[in-house]
Image (cartoon, rainbow, N blue to C red):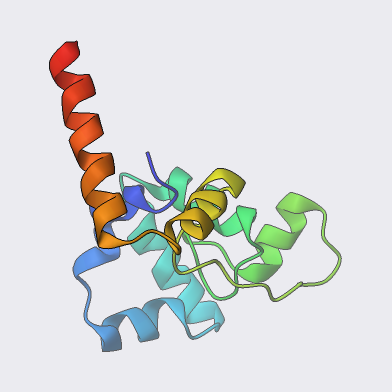
Length: 122
């Protein structure tokens, strides 16, 4: 499972931008209580909280405020880091991307042909 795959099952996935903003991006006591009530029946609340804790998120996640999550992690102050919007490539993926930069169309065709032959041999 990818780092964000759980979001397809999130209760909030179909909220409008305005609804999301009112519920999760306004940090008042009232909005926090509303978010807690809303998130309490979400099937992926635990995964959402784990994601929020993994990157010191801001705003309300899994019905928890930044302050509540700092208490859970023992952080004294927020680090204000943001999650990557795309998965961070591994060293191996970066190495392969670098190698592929120099490939010609003919190189790619030859590689695909070789893969096909190897699969046939299995």
